[in-house]
Length: 276
Length: 181
Image (cartoon, rainbow over all chains, first blue to last red; front, top):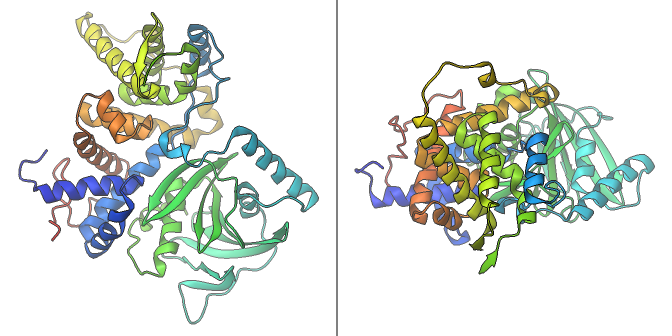
């Protein structure tokens, strides 16, 4: 460690480390975030920590089958049969296998039959990955950062050329009486993402790694070839999903949207616009 | 809580341990060997553990890793043989972008200084708490936090196309210069 560092600097770094992975005690979060917002250096330092945490905790490379078989021999048990203990950051939000399976089955039933069961995050993600059925909403003339379309009182963001994503369609669906509103965005390099907001209480079916940005907890999930992130805003579940778009880019966009109202810095958004 | 280690419960840690081993070794093949040897050592006799199973495995993985390094350093150095060549990973053909991303990240961790590497493997790869990581690595929790900050900073910079932080110190491992009033 740098001998010239003050205790205060060390403490700040320690707290930034914990803020980035969500282990900083709640009573310190607000104060530290206020300091971060006033300092470009601290903002950049936190963004670096958050980028690393997102990358590292989204790693899901499984052990090769041959190694699994060998370990199975050694332990005398089906290594793959035992339910894996999720890392600490996953444990808080992982659903029991049966519940997750039920959610997946429910999603299929809903999509095929058109209703019945309550919507879940995977269901909302299916819509976010589906085709648009409505034209893109216009930009709000009074608030250029938002589109004119809202869902559950939450405006959809414009994002626009600066962030590399432009609205190019929308759709609305109703599942078990819950309205799911989705806006699709086209990236400047041909990518596509869907941003779905479901009205009513937060959805179930949330399982995966979590990262915290500016006090907002995002859950990262894989759905086949697609990646999706979900979070709760004003009591409603928001989902952004896309194929071939890194989690870091999805989180950066969501963070930018979340922080628009508070006008806080979202310096890492442009860093990921190359995936657009 | 002191208890006997149940061999049958160890399989649930396999995937995380494999990723941790890859991050330590920097190679998929070495990681497989390291995990296999770690399990073999742990299961060679009945074990009694205190606390978290994964923390115990982290310690075992680290000890086995060092042991292999010592053995390798005593071995005469030879040129690469056919066995040293990396076989193509069939999974890479299914999701090439994803596989490349995983490889890049884990290899970047493997290039970190040892203390930083151990901290990031324990907390961000294996999912230990800061306290569990400190115990597994025989150090203080505050030390783990500091090493983690540095390690993540280097990983973020190495895997980013962006220039260094605006106004940030460009010295390796340095943190934000501004002192908070």
